[in-house]
Image 1: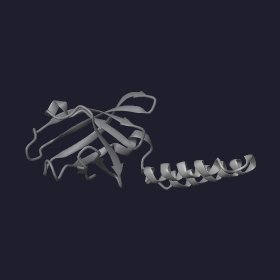
Image 2 (image 1 turned 90 degrees about the horizontal axis):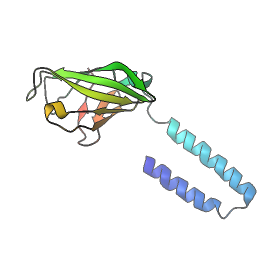
Image 3 (image 1 turned 135 degrees about the vertical axis):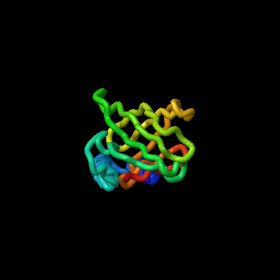
Image 4 (image 1 turned 135 degrees about the horizontal axis):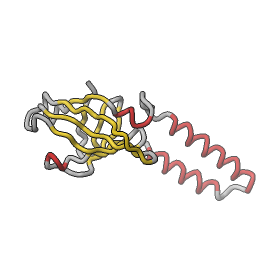
Length: 143
């Protein structure tokens, strides 16, 4: 959706150059209004801020039977909230583990899977209450 927005804005900006000064102002207002409408149609998180990620999830594709519980820690800097993922019990994983994480706003989480032998910067986003990881498309459904 962002690509369509960018392409549309580029087209509109190039078209604005052909207008006279008063028409540019009207075109800018139209672009701003259209952009606000598109951006506000994005799926809102049910909780505010980092709280949107708090909860228990499963990983039915990679580790069936296991759970992951995301908890926020007290440290917060700007839009970044430190968190941890407590999990385990699934097929092919330890019985218990704790992974460091950081939640960015109410839409992204970065989890450090290196304690389990994975990547340090695995990014996930909220998608209808579940977490979808951008690198591999895996989903953690909320329980």
